[in-house]
Amino acid sequence: MATISPSLPPQEESAARVVSDQRLRDRFGRALTDLRLSVTDRCNYRCVYCRTGNEGAQYTELAIEEYLRMVRILVSLGIEKVRLTGGEPLLRSGLVEMVRELSTLKTAFLPDGTPTNDGLPLDLALTTNGHLLDGLAMPLKEAGLRRVTVSMDAVDAETFATITRVPRSYDRVLAGIRKAADAGLGPVKVNCVLLRGFNDHQIEGFAAFSRRENVIVRFIEFMPLEEDRSWRPETVVPMREILKRLDAYRPLVELPQHSASETARRFTFDDGIGEIGIIAPVSQPFCGHCSRIRITSDGKLRTCLFSQSDHDLYGRMLRGGTDEQLAAYIRQVVLHKEERHHIGEPGFEKPSRNMVHIGG
Ligand code: SAM
Image (cartoon, rainbow, N blue to C red; front, side, top):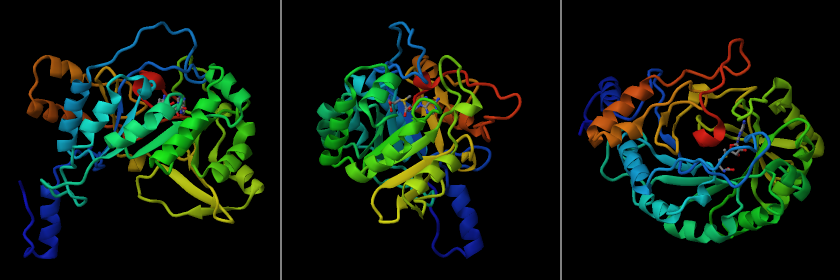
């Protein structure tokens, strides 16, 4: 492994660092450190903006051991953070055991890109709709999960049921959020996709919810990733409008970013109670700092939510690829990660798959 001599003069030292930095990078120099791994494309919700509601029972999942092999290879290449997603990941049998295995993995590089045999534990997170979280929060925490994000598009039970098309789930999700916080999976983030005419009347309610429940509420602009291709620019509630509404509810104070690749702008209120994040991929894209890649539940590698194709990592595994061959393939694929998405531009093409099949 390449190491850096402490006696090198500064200029040579920085050149040596670049050479020794073998982390996964694309051709624009972005280090790819975050993996979103979809462990199933099944979902127990039929959210109006995500699913057509008419899907059959078809779904695709790999064996847990197959996902684990992919993750191990990716970690050896520089992945530091793994977020489990789906479909609905809590539907996946073997999830707790998978988290236990993942929690034993260590990052392969120091923050400056130097390879190490003594890395930090992976940052392990999960995104869920929360329907099954009450029963699973504690086992997941004990297995090594660090944080949880719950998707929740309304803070009143009626609107919630209209959006998810699942009756009587709201109280379960609320119980799941509280259990996750009690289990130490906090601070719990609650993600809300705002759609004009569906749930934009909930903005102030979410502000109160954040303050009352001590959770970080993050509003996400609606992206063209839905199954029935119903996205229209006018359905998106843009960041500036959300901020204006929140500020009128109670004056906002902006918080510093945690890191350059952070997707959310963060705010609290003038009394410091509550936290709001705004993720604005449509009105204020953050592609320049994107550090993400994705693996779909059928083992395809995706370099962008909006990719027009995905890359058959699982197929190469099935054909007997060694870890070294798979690693070389991954390096090659990510080099061509898209520079940015083109939402809202003339000629924008919707991605080859929709959110539930990509892994949100
Ligand atoms: N079932 C899990 C959940 O509900 O969090 C994980 C998968 S779900 C597809 C992940 C997230 O994607 C959810 O927060 C959902 O609201 C969001 N999502 C789905 N379609 C979207 C779209 N077109 N634009 C923005 N976010 C979307």
